[in-house]
Length: 456
Image 1 (cartoon, rainbow, N blue to C red):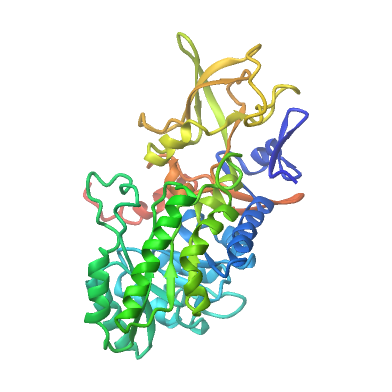
Image 2: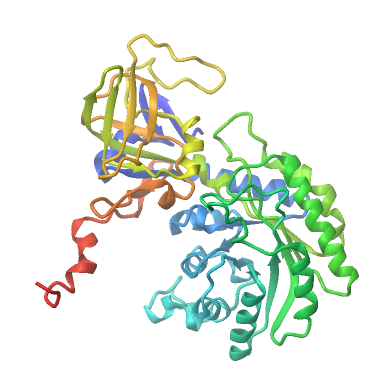
């Protein structure tokens, strides 16, 4: 079954018509395919499982709990990068022993909640999972530490709670990883140099309640080649051998993410190809009982969702028409890269005017018009696409923006006057609302409480 396909000119998500979803739930709405999400997750699970490598899903890539539950059910663990992501990982029903907490801004409260669910903010709020509060959930499997100072904070909190934990050190591989997006030259936000990591093994060898016994790296949010992943696996594997040779225990080699999305391009590397590429470098570790994991995120989620937006105005320009919609995209580097390949098309067209399939068809320009597509905010950086040849679209029409499943909160443009879209997941014939769109009252409520006491 195709996750998103046109049938006689109408876009369907699985077996539900996109126009019906737009009518029922309004726009903008982000529509997930349960089939696409689960299939992609299982494909990573099976491809890497075949060589003995575990798979942890990057929660920040698709943090909606209804999606995370389907991914966890496919057998994936969860990698959280914040306290909020940690709670979402628990609500996904993934075993806490299969959850990692990474990120550069872990607070003491985050660390406590990761070690003991009684400190979860959801416990204080009365939230339960299958009738049980987070009190019962137990500690997470791993912390990913970014610096010496963070190791010491984790140790201090763990000692205070009298709970033991395992820590993996995030190592920077500057020759392999691309620059940090939006870093303005700051390329050292994440992780530590290899020499600093080896020093940490020695310095904190006898730290109470903390066992430093793992290594982690991440090639960044930009999809990289299997060859680059093989190089990273080799570099981290050699570092693990060096640490073991100095008498340190190694229980985890975490190769992070940076994989090409499934279902976006027919020429992208497959999970099987990535697994084949890293296997030679980590085979020794697997044979010695060392856990090896990868962390796909966008690779699983990207093609699993399509954004539906409604055209508010069609503004004629000299050589094209500007479509102003009720949902826009942010001006992030990731969106600019995606703009070259992102498909934007009306959700309902005349039969025969469906978008061409990649690498197999060309657009028939007859009856088509050139469009720029932008969002509703009061800023000029919320464009969806520029210079697109599409069938005629008028005000009131609905556009489908494909491959929008990864990091939607980061990819979408919104301001004080707009909000994130609703989120819906379709499973066969059944659409289910996962996340409601915040209305005007919701957006103003946080400020309204202070209006009576504010300066007039």
